[in-house]
Length: 312
Length: 328
Image 1 (cartoon, rainbow over the protein chains, first blue to last red):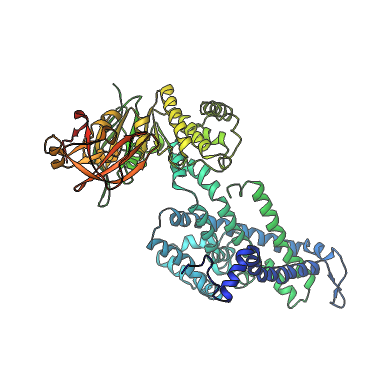
Image 2: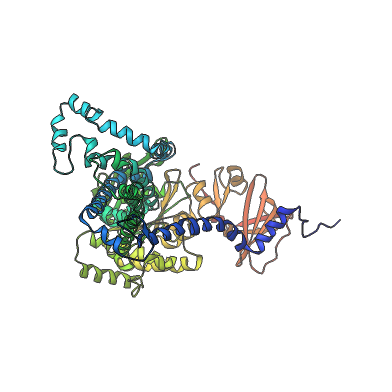
């Protein structure tokens, strides 16, 4: 008996596979439609609503939102009290991003270049493990660590280094009564909670730099510092930028940490939280929320112009 | 003769793995030297010992008489063309070539002028503004060559330089590399697993096997008088004859090699075999005979009658074609 050249379709799955083979875009379309709907309607839609709200204003007597186009609300952002909030948030975000980048680089470099097998698993576990526990638990734990009766004060006393701790706390502006009520403490907590978001993209970027490229640089006479500046850093920059987008925007939008740690100075996230809640000033809350978006756009434009994405 | 590179019982062990095991080697100045061997034979490790990316676990390495065993790569006057070229993707071709001069602190205008000269040398002038990603494989290879030569190294190391190129380009590059080496007079040391490449380009070569050098000599010496069974087998797919076969063919009871191109099919002979396979090579046909446990390849020139598979045939060769090997 001769064997057929075409096998019989066994059922629905065979016919469906055939359909997808004839029309490859159909499968792609089916897979992409739900997330695109979600992104398009829920995400971009709410962003548009936010943008729209920010151009409304609030009636000062009735406290009601006036749905008429005005730039009055944005003008309010420039009042000293509000401007301070933005400036403070921006500085803290920049400091946290820088701190994370400096701390993350050696870890990411080690993981990308040297960690193999078991040590790679230890690396991923070590970086991800803190993300598994509740964010609030971590922040409160840090509050206790940094408190005046906390472990750091105790350790400083035990090692007779209280002088150093007091000198740090005596620094103007960033110091304070204790670490948990100072900008330094807030910086430490922010850096801790966002560090994994810097390490992972950095490690991914460094992993893509072939060892032979570092060897070529040395072979041609470059010192370690020159290799770092002219080869490693430019090639890792997309990863650093990706990481800094996380740390920068997460810090700018956070409203929990500034409430729990620090000197209760206002940050953008807290301002938005208060304005849309107790104050009921949705337009100003929306205008505040637009600020981080604008800052990120400016940041990305500058990064692109500096050639951060050339190696992509 | 000035010695460019000298190994004195150099070893490089990775734990229990003896990648390079007590190797002695001298490479003369101005030589085009090939390190030939299968993968894992230690040839690349030897190259990396010269460039400084590996440190010997024993022995000493001298470059032009100076002991470099404790000298880091960036201070060695030796440059490398990497197997994957390792061009910097974020720099254009000119900056890639000028890199070695840049890290030495040469001013921009001067180093760019020099880079253009080097690009002209490898026939890539007018390509300076391109990024490596916009070049073909052969062009990238030339850039890597220009970049390695810009520092005027005393020894140029090439790690499988032609491995990633297609056949036609590879043959053209072989001629070009050879011409370039003769023009510059720099000592070239190149690593390859391709015996044709090693035989056609090098003026002397070392055959590596399991971390040791099996034979050093000119291509003709290595090809005609292989020192060991391994060399005979690896270089030019020779017939390796066991002692009893050698004796049956009129030689001493020792291992011997016999090149297929020196072997002809014959009506009668001391040893007969069964034809098991025919391989058409264009210029002729290679006929494989099986005689007992041994396979013997003979070359039948184009136009001559071929035996049928399964037929019985004897073979003949000129008496001096049988090369008796000393070692195992």
